[in-house]
Image (cartoon, rainbow, N blue to C red; front, side, top):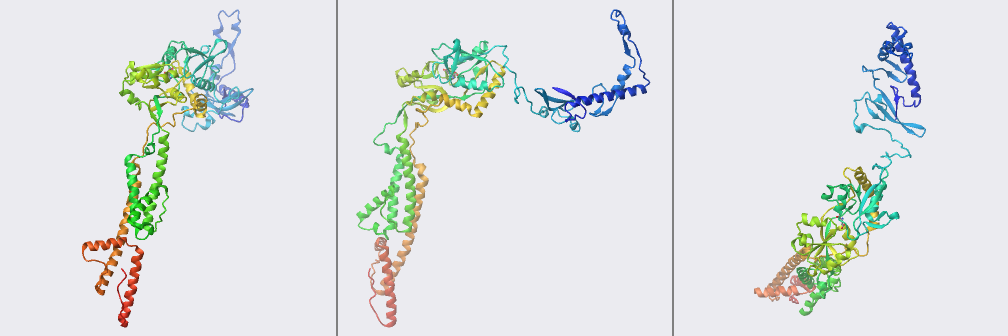
Length: 633
Ligand code: GLU
């Protein structure tokens, strides 16, 4: 609703604006009359010749017209003045110059101003005269009013009171399902009406509730109640004008979108392959399953190698690693395998030995925990009892495939995947699914069932002997179908998005479809064996550490041997006696090996003694006291 605004559009005047405008009008008339008289006009009246004729009866000839009317009108249109409501003049077309209005919102018996309208700026929340200085901008984004209050104290713009459907209820077709009635199921209604309940129905009613107008509707069932109706047929009925809409588990497919307008999908559901599975039988050798054979071999070899390396590093300084050869061999084996349980009793005393051991214990820790984890999952794993691994295996074989009667799956498998129609077996009830899958392709059953994930999740929640294999190979969603160009499709899409964003859609899903009895979520269909390559990094770290430790050890040993050898040869040449060093190559090797085998402590104490003896010999030579110089080798 608008009311005329004075040129200045005083926003505080409210109702008074009219009074001041009248004042301006009187002032305008006075100005025009003054100009009129100035132009020589005088006030006289004469008979209007146009009113003559057969007006005798009406006495129209007695009527008079104002002679100066034209002149006065001209004067009015020429008048330019500034009244109390602002500048006032007319355009050359005799329109008011820059007319402006207030836009008011009637609320009960009062009103509130929600903005202005002017020729120049269109709708705005600021007075038009403040916009005259700016370039005109009547783009829709610039057209703004303050928030309206609608009847019922609503601030959302009403879309009308009732969805216009020629005064009758919306006829909503619903498939009369005989299976998976969690989605759509018929219940006895009052007065013989068709009543439905289920996930799809609750999503529809909740979405309709969110519409800004009311939509009276009635459900009409479709199908004979003996088998699931073909959903493409029910959508086709819309085109015949029997239904205005179809609500149910209707997948949005290209074919169907050619016949009706669909809402946004309210649930995702693609096609999956379901096959029988069986528990993997526990065998006596199940404990070997976690690792591949190369992994077992390399792990065993590493146990022995690390045992040997630690023995080498410890042998010269640790009595635990000394003794008769047989005992030492057993020590190596015992030590290395007891590290598997961190139960080795032999202490390591050399720094290099400790380094190698700590790296190895870390490797053992990882191997241990991986083995435990893998064994646990291997013992609970299920195994496919059919060779089908996904849709690819089905395409490659010639075995029968089950599908749900009435579903678009039939056409999809034939037209899109090129599967022969003779391979497809229609199944009506979940019991038929079970029966056909159990029998298998050799006994008149099916190799696998292809159906939408939504149904299969419900099915598998109570049938643990079957499982989904491979990926979902076709993606689709379910929506509500409406007649072409029906505004309800768009409005319900918005409502579905609102339901989804508010979390309501998920709640409805959980209420109808959430099952916890037996889910296929935890079913692992592949036996994952831990391979050598997953541990190659660990083994190379440990191998490198052992190798470096050995290198350092032998380098130190060589230095020590050199010192020992030369001091011995000095002594033998100086003392004239053989120190067991030997002259030949094999003799030298024997000496080296016996040196390596010898306890480091005794080598050290011997060299200390020798040093003392050398010192005492030096002093006795100096002091003239000769004594025996032979060492105790
Ligand atoms: N959701 C299926 C479809 O849209 C219907 C399945 C059925 O009724 O069997 O085709």
